[in-house]
Image (cartoon, rainbow over all chains, first blue to last red; front, side, top):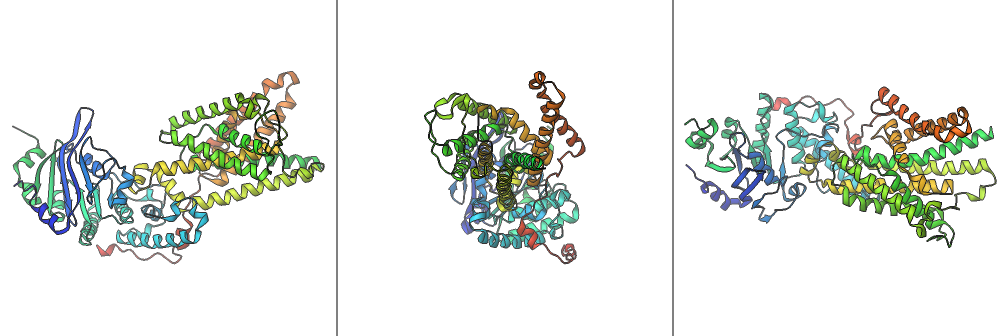
Length: 268
Length: 330
């Protein structure tokens, strides 16, 4: 059942590991939220990180995304040791994330939210707006076209010029997805993409995630909705009390007594 | 009539020098959310640098390099930008209220330095004989006032256009993103520290330029010009006009300076000479009352925050009717 390395090694041979987090530890005061957890993602994989509340999933996620630094253990992205790098450096390494509770720039337009995801914009250097206005404008125009395509991809194109604060919870999740796609990440970390999303939007969201994975993106998602995990992912990684509890195909995981006990609580 | 014209030009010129400071604060606070309570210190740096660069040689203190006024202004902006950068490099990671305390401390330190570094700054006696622009017109007061007003108006206009250009650029967009949600901006690869520091230094450079324009307009500077009351006045200007709005920053400067000037004449007219020094405190009360009244009437200032969008976005905005819903795809 605990085929911890089987499928991973198989896919690693095909495409190589893009994320290798080994023996991570992160403590908050006396609580070891992540306690010796390892997780690897092979190129093109779609993996679910699941576990009961308080298992340390979001902490693990924040460690991989660089928002938190591990107390021990190592993280490699594309073979490069990224310990000590802040969250703003991850996107440059091809790793993009969304948040459990979406964080749109509420007073900015939907389109500008997506534009903020663009990388390497000349116009983000203050002086270039005066020294090379033509090049800035050309780059910005290309970025606007790309952002509009991404908004069409997540069906928010009609709301492009509205402030992001008018969006519903589900639309905000879609906006976050478009915003991170603007940066062309190779790995996308999705923190509970389905939470609070109405069924119609959820189908759209799943459809888009599948399309992205089909286009070669590596995806790690935290999700409680096991139906969605079973539909999307070839592999699920289960955490409990900051450690790896089980790993394998979602259908097997769902039958694992240890996983069931962890979710339902130890009633013995 | 000529007196009125001359006074009007004088009043507006002083108001415009404050408008420059207010524009600098708008970059820091309005666009980036940096709580700078050390404005007076940064304005002082600009004023003293420009004074030292442009005054004639003297034995009283360092400097007296006798450079042209324009060189003084440029030097003031560069030097203050650099000083602000250094202060920012130490403090920019602090949360807003702690940044306020740190910048206030920086301003007090700057004030004490210029008060005590007598060999550089002239100490409590300040620096006089600062060359004034259009000195050749000094014997024709109206022409002199109008020429100065035109120059300051041109500076304010140029700054306004440049700052609007920046606000609508990708750089301005990143500042707004960081102000609205720093973790989200970080996740998009935007280094909050780097952008904040740039905005802080740019705002500081503009404040330094303002200090220089004031110094050359009045012709004399002393440490007492750069007390915390100056910081308070500029904050009142930006809040009254509308934080986050460059036009608001300029309008607020004119309105608050108007209240200040009017209350000064009211104090002069209503109180006997021996009471006037104490009654001058009423001017600060007047500003406070005006601030309260305007915030009750318009909580986001007279003009409020402008909704700024990239000019490229607006240019690319569809003018035709929006396309039909694409939800049928699902």
